[in-house]
Length: 441
Figure 1: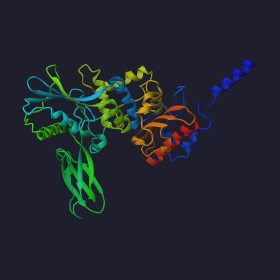
Figure 2: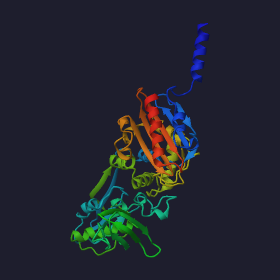
Figure 3: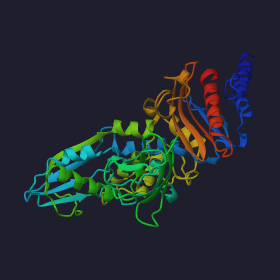
Figure 4: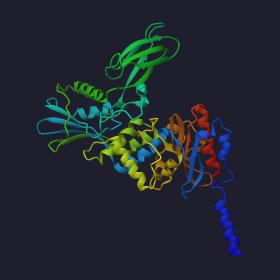
């Protein structure tokens, strides 16, 4: 009799809802201004591995920058935590120099100057090896009309200063044209239609079909405004910067900068590098698209027969990594590494399962908590309890980990694809859903 009672007890337990009776996610969604059909959620208990709640979790949504979680971890798995993103200067016995580019997304003009000071004034030649990644500078599905958007700056082996030029717009006297100046030289040309007035409101439009790097600047300025303008040719910007630094250092080099593959005749002279932790912060905390795209291709270079990383090579690594974790990739589409492309399609279930896999849970300690990164002004009452990456491309998204008041940890992914709703309403729904996890699971 006792055995029968126990059997019935456990049978009923299995049939109970897979989430706490106190957590009512459906009610939270129904009371929001978001259409339920446009919300996808997956929540997984890290200890048990069970999905405790799901809503449309297998439906494909645009993930936005949440996708960086997937591509970053794939690349880190190949490169390792000790990897350094290097730009190296070499010299041979013939007084020839070679700069081996590492596609370092954090390389700055000051870093480059540190290397260049090692070049002697009588240098016979300066070569550049840019073979670490291919020359495709634009992500699949990126819109060329957004080429003034700093978030969509091009990326390549020649990464320098974020591949952007800072341009300042300075008021003069009321009604008179503003002045335009650049922090560093790059051949931008402006049609200046900005006047000095009583407010700050400018608009920039690139007109490459009129002339290369032609920008029409219109509007009004009252105080100094600075904008980061993406360069349209990263290789040209790098070489112009190199030439400027050589001139500043009184190195009278008038030769060209030809490509040359690094060979044993060249000996290492100096290195500038950034650590994996530097890139972790750039990608996972600051949501840096250039860092995400470059790292993905750099990882691919480690497996490429010719040593040159491509997006296709990175995608193959991602598929292999997910297969090793027994995560199916047939129902997702990854068009770039950063999540910018509107061609990307992920499911909440895939993201949550990826995060919940024991091989990836170290991501928790790398993600921003409220008060940091893209969570700087959000959900501060969960500081040290919520660790998450946000995204915003056609969809609002957030994914990561929650340490609940009940002492458990959950991996979660929330994708909201309601294009008609206000961003503030979508963010509010995200917060209420996460609060439900935090307080009631």
